[in-house]
Length: 248
Ligand SMILES: NC(=O)c1ccc[n+]([C@@H]2O[C@H](COP(=O)([O-])OP(=O)(O)OC[C@H]3O[C@@H](n4cnc5c(N)ncnc54)[C@H](OP(=O)(O)O)[C@@H]3O)[C@@H](O)[C@H]2O)c1
Image (cartoon, rainbow, N blue to C red):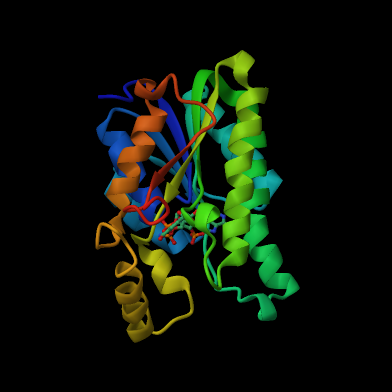
């Protein structure tokens, strides 16, 4: 029970990495609130997380929506100990074809969304709270065709540093977790056919030093460490969980 008595908010907690983390947090004793946009998934997510979990519809790109989320967290749980700002998605953006709407889509979710989420949570953090931002291994390496996502995640990684400074007096730690290629529903949202997804996975796997893609539970385990008091001397860092892609 490493999170006993703690309250956690997970954006993008209705799928993939966020959902796996919500399950692990609950197992470790936390009260969990998850957000997403697609309400058709909520019954499934409630069944997965149990009746104790609160599931809220909110787009992280809306400051008002995120304020409403944290107002509900405050009302139901009285404060917040853990924020996992994880909502995000990926679309290929080769340089020559980037248009305004792609630019806004990616930057709005991964940068503005993180800023609005953090701003909304600020008044309800308890002293000693832990914040984890989901970045990506490609913020260190870059990636062909994914420049905007890499840049947006690099911005989020930077925010973890500056916000850590700003929140030192409240003993709030801000860190990032940088997943490598992880098998989640995200892969099915890239606009590729099933065959193309399989080809992508095979090609990608051949570039991973550990020889396989990661599982959402392997990211959740890293997030649990950063969320718990075991990481109490860790602040402003990025924990890379990528099978060695960016390091070897
Ligand atoms: N999978 C990977 O290989 C990988 C690698 C590096 C980094 N990441 C990062 O890990 C995070 C989680 O990704 P995942 O692989 O778990 O993807 P996923 O299974 O597609 O889950 C993404 C979650 O984010 C939510 N979301 C997306 N846009 C949102 C918005 N505007 N407002 C609120 N919620 C939103 C989704 O809910 P709705 O669809 O209902 O909005 C969903 O709950 C993302 O930040 C992603 O960039 C993933």
